[in-house]
Length: 164
Image (cartoon, rainbow, N blue to C red; front, side, top):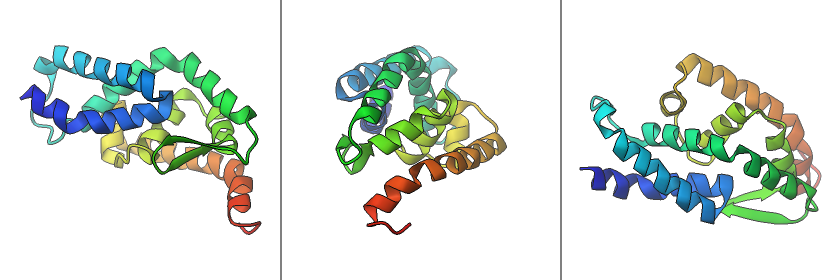
């Protein structure tokens, strides 16, 4: 039973973590996510249709232990010339403007927007993963988007050849 959960969800958890902390550390944290989940499997609510939000919640909690290194990584990206692009996962470029904008967010808001954007979680899944009421998820996500939009407009204008 647990092997099925691992096989089904490890690749997605790994991809999400890889975007946050890089492939080497992502493998360690993803593995630790499943170690923690295995230890807590007795407490898992079998009425939940999908284990993904529960696993993402564990992964986000483990990420909190790596907060300092993550912030150093984003600061390094922010120092790179904005024309340089770094691929954090296939198809998801992280340029200096995005890295800088992410640094302006609190850790909870950063986790929320990255779970939404990189992991593709729904509002309901975000609420479950972060153990928040869905109304809080909606308002925080809206507030975070509003904060990011003006920070990213210059980068969008460059991508579109000057037109926003």
